[in-house]
Image (tube, rainbow, N blue to C red; front, side):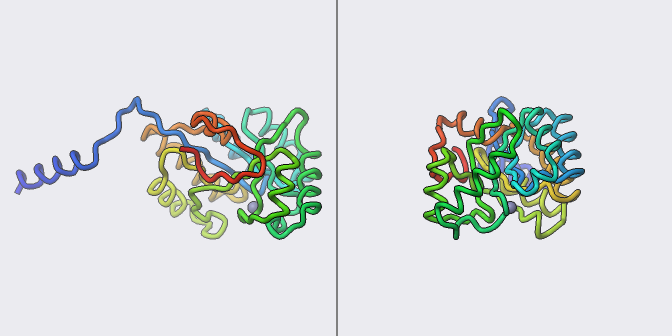
Length: 223
Ligand SMILES: [Zn+2]
């Protein structure tokens, strides 16, 4: 019986070779809908402790409430992108409406912050949005891994989904809107770092893969 188990184990190892420690896998954590006061602050502490840089897609109306958190995100070296001013469906907006959302949000960003990406609320796409992002010089960043943290409010489920799904080059969608998402994010980092994953910003991930983000173009992952 023991020999049979050993044989099965060997076959499994041959079929699924373990990647070397030195072979790095790069992924980007992204956080939508903030800044969010205490949740953002707790997340930033955790990211700093783990020496991880992430990407924050910020809403204009929340930047008005939490400018200090936005300053810290920027000062800590994370990437900031635009998530619209009102969090309304930008895919349904006209060119003028979408551009107004972008400009009003950009005006509230920390001084010196030059966003590369916009993520439309819900990932919703449309002609007006495409034209507005082209005019504003922003590429569109959606995602490739969505654990639906905002719906489940279950840190364990989010962690299990992400760690079981993630591949090199993925862009993971999370929200710094509750303690459960912050718990999940920090546990995901701890588990995936131990597996050789490196966490970088979306722009760094693009650069590592030789991609220059083009205004108006949609990106989900970088491989
Ligand atoms: Zn959102």
